[in-house]
Length: 154
Image (cartoon, rainbow, N blue to C red; front, top):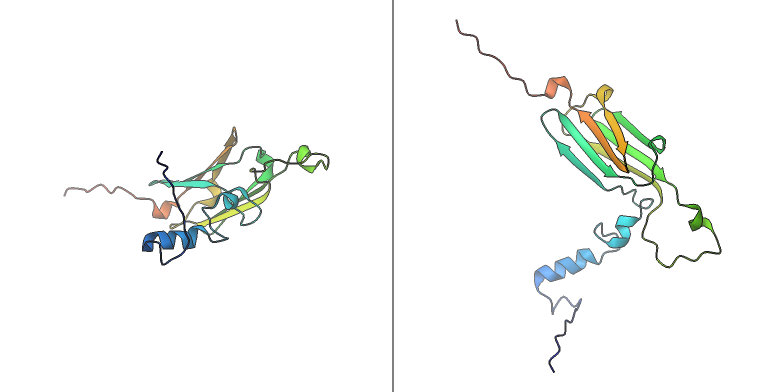
């Protein structure tokens, strides 16, 4: 019977260069791709976010399950947008009689700030929370929006 064996080594002399560099960064304690890092919102203030841009402005989309609208804070200063809030742990997590067998859901405060590449119109920012999905629409300032200029014939 033949067995396939996969042997992983962290010895840089036995690994190809690409694998050596991957091991160096993937095994780092503060690796942003590590599973533990992604679930700890308090340490590192991580909030998973997608940002989309178009000619009119930017759209932020974040998953915030269990967070109420009144627990979210959105601020704009200059061309920086900051989204913060807190996810409160359920009462069962505070019960001393209950021992967690697996804990993958992060609780605590989170905060993210993004500097937009162009000026924004802070007075027209719109935010909606629907079924744990936060959508924030940040329009560009009128001065940076593309304009179409009609050519006049003489």
